[in-house]
Length: 492
Image: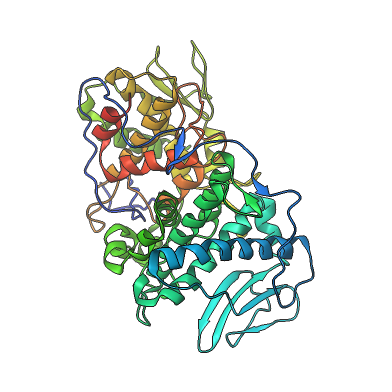
């Protein structure tokens, strides 16, 4: 969220613009008891039961025998080569079965070290290029990966399956190249369409792995899938990059959606992602880089900002007729009952107690080159505000008669936090209304915080999280896309 000073006589305004999916209304809670939950099952991830079985390379399985240029036989190269082999198995079956097309294998697989001498691929040198990529056209058909920096970095941060996920995305581009018009691909197809489809194709493959079909890898749908979702966040665009820009991949909120669609459905769903559909659900296209000049991250410890946050939450949920809780700087403590950190809802006192120092640590943007949520690194201001909003939502749930200490409370919490996020969208960025609004990239901060192991955004009153990150994201998106009546009516 951002702050700028307006004309003398007006209040301090946090003005915003954001990346998100379109659709949805101003949150409007509906009185009555919550009805049965629909569509989101905490024990299910896109049709695959949530489990905490093995994740990673299978033990005792021989490495794939594929020709790879530049390979050193390192652990990183073996991991990547095995991933390609399993991807071959998957697409060998999918293209003939769904598209009546034979899947031809990649002509050139290349391993390189971005710290070493460059290798020429598609007329470009890999020197200093920390990446994995597919290159097609003009006689080239190659997938390459940086074994020196990227692959070990991914493995350290998210585990070896993150490498498999990234290569599944790159193989998705190869699939597009082979399908052509059957995947709505042409020379004029915008980059954002190519990237959304590739994320979706990545989801197709990871579902196959999660269903225990892959020769070399396993993926559980608990923490294993959560880490894959975090990897999708890792490869997002920087905040403020217009989706119409050449090379735009999409921000995390959009990329996670595409991945989940792929995980839920078969590759035909991905091939059907057109420019029109994608353009209709990505709001960042309307937000220019000039918007970023308005300000920067705001301090959750600033009393004026906390006042604006209180006003925003009160206004968003005023139709609930609930006794609205007051945000109180008390170290995140309740006089009676259990407390959660860095924010807590105290039903007896009807307050949201906050620990300012801990929230400031979350709100501090990560240093360049440091991933959000890494040890000692913050995420951004909206991550901190979403933690507070999640505890505020407990008062709304209490008024609606919903339980506060089970998984559905966690889903309702994520959903209501998403509904509040939608409420803060600036309907007219040119009007300085003295209110709190979302900023470019704020929803990505919510995605990052939502997937943290200790986040409250999808947790019950005691801080117990919904185990499935897949379900957490779906619930948050439901609130954002629809309104808070769905949150209060759909969760038993």
